[in-house]
Length: 393
View (tube, helix red, strand yellow):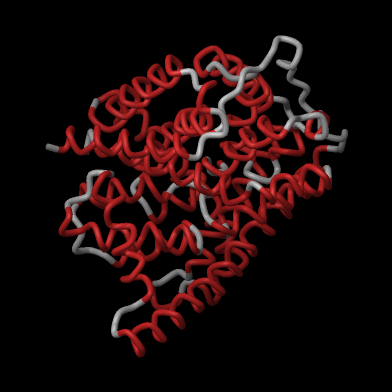
């Protein structure tokens, strides 16, 4: 039964994306089929094989060690009052490690290790997805550098890009998550779901972009010019990345305070007037999508509520809510977890358009205009990834 629901789910995602397509006649179906098959193979390996368990275990172990090192730093600064009564505040345990992970990313960038990895993985992907080298590079870079920082590395080409190519770059940035935040996700979700989502979203972004925004890149256009970072001393660079990580942590904390409080207030008002919370109401709206992702109908409303929470606020708020729903089955938790691992939410429209606008005002305004379509496509990526993962849970 779950296979039939998954097939229906994939067809629904493809149908909804096809309706919003910019150029239906230009869609190339062969790369789409190849990437769907690759998604299924990779999901099976990661979720259902010993090799996959070993890979995820290794990835998880590395991040556990990194989080342990990060906690030594936070313990030194906050230990006097952060750990009393045996509990650690969310800001300390989940958000502060972003500072340390950001510093590591800066070191790998400084010694040209990350640029080498990103460039050559991108070149391999471009042979599979039928897209340009720039689009493939950007997708990999987004998953490591983050949805705003990635545009700095391609700023030489931003001003020359036509609207359709700019859309694909922004779609990749919204569909993935940055490596600096992955450790924080692993504190709230099982690592196997985080890793699976990272891999599936990478290909899912290409699949949905190929449907909603199909085009061909000519050999003359298929040029990749990566902006070299300004030459700094090692410690200048390290200080900059540490401060960038701290800014991310503070920004996420501020967003959480605001969104959690607003959702609580709106829930209270809806409960007072309609005797149903706002999240429960959204749960009914999103329940059909949860069902085609493979969630049992008895749990679809709760799962739909978590999906809607992520969309209207952010993934951190939804992940915190997911941890409270101990009544959900392991399969539902797995499917919803995969859905939650992406930057597809309303606030990301502003973040991405703002990042592009900082480099090129005209292009930033273009991004703002297709912002809702960007979010629509990125949400379809999350739904597709959850459907594929549900096949093997």
